[in-house]
Length: 153
Figure 1 (cartoon, one colour):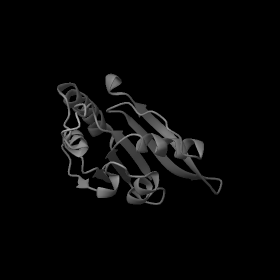
Figure 2 (cartoon, helix red, strand yellow):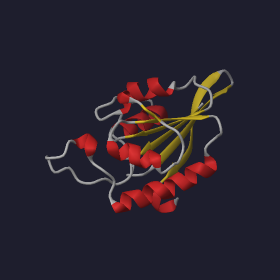
Figure 3 (tube, one colour):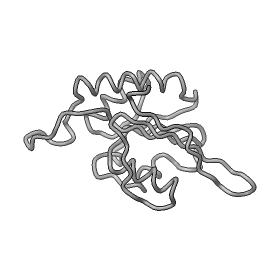
Figure 4 (cartoon, one colour):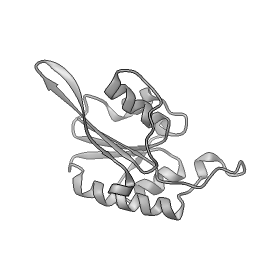
């Protein structure tokens, strides 16, 4: 299985008036999303599923990919590491699952997969962390395939 974590691109600052889930991408965020989406379009496997938080900024980020996606409420603000791994079907799902979500949850997923325990690892706005699950010598392993910053896409 391949698990791709994509943090939403840069969004408007919260002003306390607008609900957090309604914040939209900035002009810079739209450029970040398009740039990373172009890279993903070239590298995503054909067999893939795209799951997106219901927040406006994550949907805008996913929309840049120009692929069908499903809105998954468990990936919303306040979602947990367990929620992400469960909806993705990690590590037993076949194909690839692209999750478009939020910090600190995505960083915590990355920490758990690579370090064995949750920790507050940073994931840059618009950044991608790509993992693969494989079996070697009867042991399941997690492999970090790519970490992509939007400035380098």
